[in-house]
Amino acid sequence: MVPHLTTALKGPLLDLERRFLSEQPAIERWFRTQWLEHTIPFYTSVDLRNSGFKLAPVDTNLFPGGFNNLNPDFWPLCVHAAQSAIEKICPEARGVLVIPENHTRNQYYLQNVAQLTQILRQAGLKVRIGSLLPEVTQPTPMQLPNGGSLTLEPIQRKGNRLGMADGFDPCVVLLNNDLSAGVPDILKNLEQNVMPPLEAGWTTRRKSKHFGAYSRVAEEFAKLLEIDPWLIDPYFAVCGEVDFHARTGEECLAAQVDTVLQQIRAKYAEYGVKEDPFVIVKADAGTYGMGIMTVKDASEVRDLNRKQRNKMAVVKEGMQVSDVLIQEGVYTFEDIDGAVAEPVIYMIDHFVVGGFYRVHTSRGVDENLNAPGMSFSPLAFESCCAFPNPDCAPDDTPNRFYAYGVVGRLAMLAAAVELAEMQQ
Image (cartoon, rainbow, N blue to C red):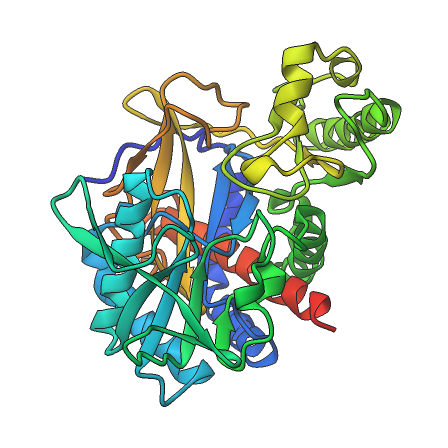
């Protein structure tokens, strides 16, 4: 069953979905030209927010960790997409070394690694899982909540190649580790294909660079469809050299918050939106929903208490926050069984391979849902996001999911542009 969507189906978003359907041949043709011009990340996940008047990405992850949450019916799509991606990068590839995150206590994350490994194996590859943890000195089986298991193994470096002590010498090193703690020396200067590239890790990547690239992609796409790019693109600003503990940079932060709120108010007035504008203030680097707050007035970032400053000052792996993104908040008016929900789209190569809803029972429509207490609805996408049905209404399944797939692919394309600029 596809959960009932309670999105407000009036106004610009429904018009946008109709536009996507009527222009589907032109959209797909435009995407094909983009795939020829850009090197697409091996895999991507995109968090979307659907407010009923706007559909936009709010986060793009180049090391997705939720393959275990996808509808099992979509696994064949994942396998075919993985085959396509590997063939372009290393046609003769037989072996892949997967390097996961170090948090082995998170068994749901390990189920993601197990599912990713299964997809690659079904794509015809020998797959081993190499741990960066120094305490993993021999093959270490890990039992999973779903009854499955996986084995973490120590990595061995010989010259500029990674492999295993038994002679396993992969063509491809696939990172499922976002490198928040930095790039280990063992991963530097490898002659093997490393995917995604090391530049994609949070040691160097910045969300503001991604959304800058996304704005350019969205503007070009909007010209194709003759729509307002704001309908698919969140405003944003950035403040550098913020120190929440020392309370420096607060004026810059407050000024940028005010600027973005004014931009949103102008658009809300243009489209007759009655909701209160808000922004999301978050670290410009890092994941796992850390260092994030909802702000509706600039004064709120001037008057943070100690607990709030501590929350904003540090993100994953103890990274200190100094660069801060101020992003237009996009309401989510979707829910599942009364709980607030947002769609997450998964892609391998340039193919949409499925998605799910992130659900939170104790968060509001204007809050970050990537937080403790969240859950996932893995069967939410009963239909693939790649095939719209012109005989259905724009908001019917699979047409709404097609719209999600279009915006998700725009974010993936922006990530390709972003990475190319970082590697220049």
